Structure formats: structure tokens, C-alpha cells
Image 1 (cartoon, rainbow, N blue to C red):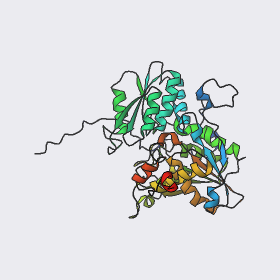
Image 2: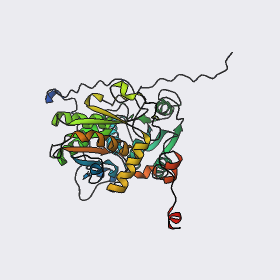
Image 3: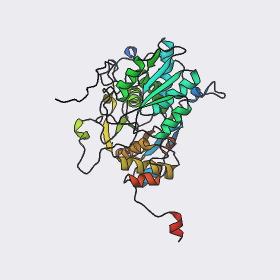
Image 4: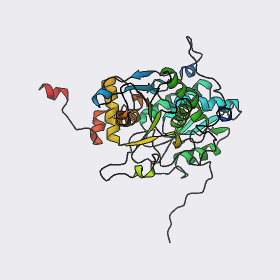
Length: 382
């Protein structure tokens, strides 16, 4: 008889359920369900009330070197989300979720925020929690970088690590684990980026509007990665309403199942499933992810992503993370269909700080097989 221990069952709100949102690109504006205005909208200040008020309004920066090297003729701009205060586009959703939870009475003084995160949402929430005086617990897989852990701990958050091989609904997995931990605590709230409508709404109300504002409404292609899908959904819906001819391209790592049609996710024999790029790609489609706004998908491996991220750093001076390399790799392929007078925007979601001991390290890149070993400067001089 087998003596294998079975895990106790635990019921929690699943993150992979279909959204009940009634939004449609051709609906009457009067029927638009996105009517809840940003509780504390980002504005242009001279003196900022707090660091939270610096979230958003990230610049669009012209890419001058890589597009030319890749044979891209259109005008290509980077939406520099890594310039948000905690270093990623997740600041937008983090602040929006907290502000809404406060406004609706879900989050009160003295409460603890518990959140499953691959890192960036956890950092964004930890920053906002530090400013607002909440305790913070982040439940995060072991594979995520130690820089993320150090940053969240510096902000006062407690970190609980989960095994990499546990599915989201496993009691020891990241998502079910966060809900289980919160259920055992007093006055604890899971804001749940995978199900919370304020995640995509933050991008619908700010990121999408900023792109339209800064391009004068003339944007022909937007390329972005997908994780929870909050950015893709929010930006995509805003763009489909205001600039329906614009093509949205989703960048998805090998090993993820988000790309459509599903056959795109079949990993070729010569391709290793991506396991190192953090923050994008999942084995399930989150409730917050509306894939109907994506017109085209591209797949990308770890090596291509990291090498492109290093090119963005070295050639364009943009201190980005690995998922930015994924988006840029796909953008260089997709944007070749555009004319010189057309505009492509690439969303660069986070920065290099989280990955100094990973893809920013030559030794790590060589160890993983992403970079050929070469002699150091002393050997070259000799």
C-alpha cells in the first residue's frame, strides 16, 4: 500500500476563470463598463505629494540603433516603464489596486496585504504599502531573482518562497498558497492581480492614454509581453477604442500557453522552453487577460530575449530587464511590415536592477549557455 502523503484540499478564487467584463471594441461609449475613474490619477507636478505620485507618465524614447541593424524601416519608440519608481509597469496596477481597496473599504488601516507575485507586483505593492503604512507579505516562487527579494525586504515586506514545480492551484503553489496564508491571518487581504479589474484598468486609464497622447493618436503597432495580461488588456482596449487600425502584437516566451492559436505554443524540437525570463508567460490564462485585443503573437526563447536585452542596454542606453528583450525581439520581426512613415511602440516593462546577478552577468550567461566564454581584458592585453 502506498504511503504517499496527500495534500489537504483548499478552496480559493481561481485565477484562470473567464472574465465577466462586458467590454466590446465596437460598443456604444455609453455602455462602456470602464466608468470607475482612477481614485488618484497621476498628474504632472512640480512638487510631488509622495513617491506614488511619480508613477506613470513614462517617456516614449526613439530607438535609433537596433531597428536599423534589424532592417526595420518604421519609427520605433520604447515606452520606458522601467522608469516607474519601483522599476516596473506594475507600479500602476499596485497603486490602483490599493487605492480602490481603500475606497471600497476592503483595505483598512492596520491590515496586511498578501500577494502572489513573480516579483514586480510584489515590489510595487511593497513600495505603496511602505508609504501608506500597511504590512506586506509576498508569496513568490524560488526561481525569481534574489535582487527582487532584497528590494522587497528593504521596503519592509516579508517574503515566502514557493517551489518552482508547484502549479498555481497546488496548496504550496504561489497563488493558492497566498490565499491559504491570508486565510490564516487576521485582517489580511489578497488584492489578487490575476483577478482584480483594477490591474487592467490602471493601464486603460493611464498607459494607453499616454501612448495616444505622446504619439498624437498616430500609432500603427504596439508590441508587449503578457503575464497577468493587465497591461495587454488595458492598453489594448483603450487603443482599440481610439485607434482601431493599430495592430497589437503579443510577445510570449516558449513554455507559456498564452499565444493564440494554441498551435503556436507547441515547442519545436530545437527550442528549449523558456524558464529564465521572469514576469511574462504563464501555464494558464488569467482572468485579467483579454487575448481578443491581441492581433498577432510571437514566441521567443530565453537566449534571444537576454541577448536583445543586453543590446538595448549597450546600443540604446536603456537599462532594461529580460522581458524587455522578449518584447523587442518580437517587435523587430513584426515591425518589418511597417512603412517608414508608420510608428511602432514597444513596451519595456522593467529594469536591470532585478537581474544584476542573472543576465547582466557574463558568468551567468556563460553558465546557462546563452553566451560564449571569452577571455577577459587582461588576457587580451597579454
